[in-house]
Amino acid sequence: MVDLSDVRAAHARIDGHIRRTPVIDVEPDVIAPAGRLWFKLEQLQHTGSFKARGAFNRIRAALEASAAPSSESDHDPVRVIVAASGGNAGMALAHAARVHGLPAQVFVPENAPPVKVKKLRDLGADVMQVGTKYADAYEAATARAEEPGALFCHAYDQPEICAGQGTLGRELLDQTGGEVDTILLAVGGGGLMAGVAAAVEGSARVVAVEPAAIPTLRTALDVGGPVDVDVSGIAADSLGASRVGTIAYEVAVRTGVDSVLVEDADIVEARQMLWKEYRTVVEHGTASALAALLSGAYRPAAGERVAVVLCGANTDLSDLG
Image (cartoon, rainbow, N blue to C red; front, side):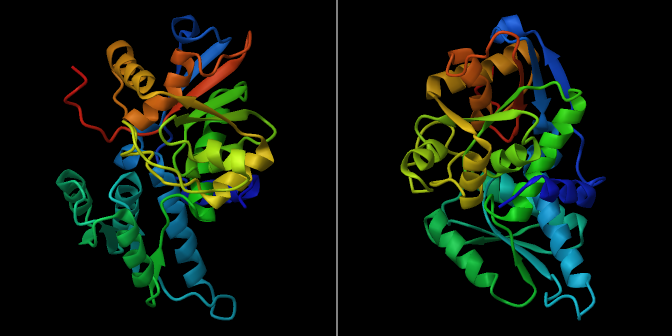
């Protein structure tokens, strides 16, 4: 489980290593009849997504633990960062590892898009291509992480990862003067949602926005726990986790996170609007959060103050026009 104390510890640990990304005021009448509307521009974070926050917290926490006196710590010194992700998590972890002078081994399927493999290598990662499915790469990564000195970093379901992502929530509260009532953000595996919901518990509510084609959280809430769902649709490249994380589910239940679903067509429209009206480039998964407002999947109450988290920008620009 992750709570506010974990997020505060993460903030102290990664301060100075991640960017304090901007928040901008948006004309609410153009998008939704909210009392006030903000965009949190987290796509400007290192490596183009919020994932850098969790990556730095996971690595720095492990380095702190391994540096503790031997009487206080049984941790092996961290010698290599290990992950299974060809996307935003892998890039963030490769970047954070390089900053700390550590090698990173990132496991991806053999059929991973060459552009993602190149990005990982450009960030200094040793890319290990294994099998034809993400599950094959994940299994190989966890096996490698059993070796001494290897630190396994999950894409979204580890306490340090979630707490690091939660620093976005505390930052947002500070930037809006604590006035925000509701935070809309996209959910795949749920690491961002878990961290932010823990960070703002008692101060603001979180609404999780999911593609209708990948309802990981909605399904978990309906059946009483994380289960696998089919993965498809336009946002699968960034929100393609087949199940929501255990930590995310527990935090969602504890804090009362709501889930709303949006269709692919609404996601495309939201992404195009962000480019045409605000010259802001985001991934389709990221655009899901705004799609909830544009489509009416989420309707703010009169006077409600809403923040939309734009969490990632690693996307193909060719279809933006």
